[in-house]
Length: 603
Image 1 (cartoon, one colour):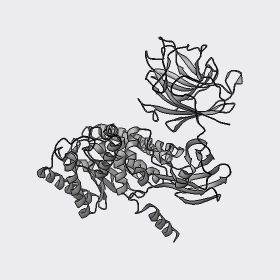
Image 2 (tube, rainbow, N blue to C red):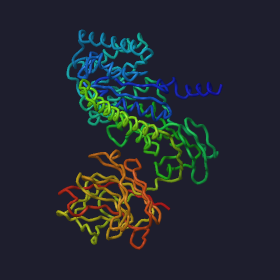
Image 3 (tube, rainbow, N blue to C red):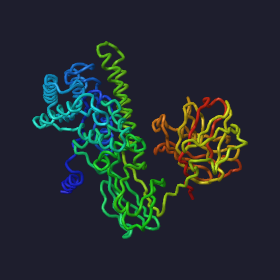
Image 4 (cartoon, rainbow, N blue to C red):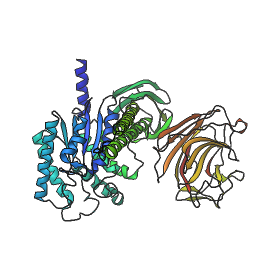
């Protein structure tokens, strides 16, 4: 009876039952859009993070240029046998049509090849894998929205004829139907209305979407599978000092004083959407993605009027009004520790699919007719790497408890760079790197460079700080060695967060600048770094014997403790500084840029 009740509640909460079951084996089959491994990896990460205890495997078998007859990877029978059926799938998604329409107005003869070929494909799958569940994907759009069509009516009108055929076929053959065309086109219309120029970057070549377009495509596929909207839901009555309704989470250790605090362990993780990417943000805001698939809700009523700041595990997440919190805040778009955990899951998704793709496309297919003794060893080795990465992915998806605190008042971060001049900062005249005068404020950012070859230096705050958290955005030219100095002396003796953006360099690690016997730390930072863009770093230093933590774009990459205080004289406070390295660790004319510099002092 209890199991039946739980099942009924699940259906009430989530709508129809999710199509992906424990033990399913999913194969994504299609052309170059599937070969991009973007909508498919988003879908995989969603399943793994939303259902972390389900054992589901995913194989990504797209091949650029494919049609219903096959393509460069072989004829359709060979493709199905080698790249689909060999994995014994329980679910297959099929995305074909973009190439089948031949990029022209609708042609009945060409369409007949597609329709008959698609019917045969379905029959082959059903015959060779009885009980298989097929998801027919209506072709993703050709972008006739953000740019004028190339001929009357546009190519997407042709693709919609193909999509309508799949709707009819799906009803006849009992296929799941996923519309990846009309919802994406509607998103493009709203995006164009909001920002016409930026919207063209969602499908930059009109055929192959970037990550933002693929996320919306993945959303359409997930909706066709009846994916749940809820990550978790918590309601708290601050005035009544009680926890109300919860969903998909466990809430314990609630406390009601000046701050409202509780411990929360969700059963799932949010999708790690990068809303700092302007194109991704535009696509998400122009769609229903967050509302339909990514609801991680916190609702707190009964708070005193005014602003309240949310901390999770001691990290500041943001500030909302009492009215906003009473209505409910969706945390999925905030870079919470849960978001960072889900982001790590997605990195493992990308890595393991890349390994499988290399095994398949660089070894199995091109060498399948070569009698090589080492082939079995090579492919089994790559399979082992793939499986190990999947195991790491699944471990990374296991939810963990987090401590929430709602504190009355605005954000505790204070700006220490005004964006227009260097007020509050000064150039060190006694630093061993030099006293370069190459410090300017350009476009709201501090830029630093060597004013003559080899001549560097540091720029320091006038104030000293003890325990604090600093948030700073950086954008270096490649080839420059810089650093963020914490508790610095005028001479530049400090704990340094490395900003060595050059060959063999490290960003986000810890180093003792002119300090003796400091054993530094080199993190794994490459996955979190956005090349050629602004990157947000947050560093926290606290304790007389310092503990330093560093987050890169919301991802914690460093958690380091010194063995003792190595600052001169055992100093427990100092200035903050940014560096232009002296000598040849700087490219001529190169710049390092710093902006949005804020600090939160800690007890």
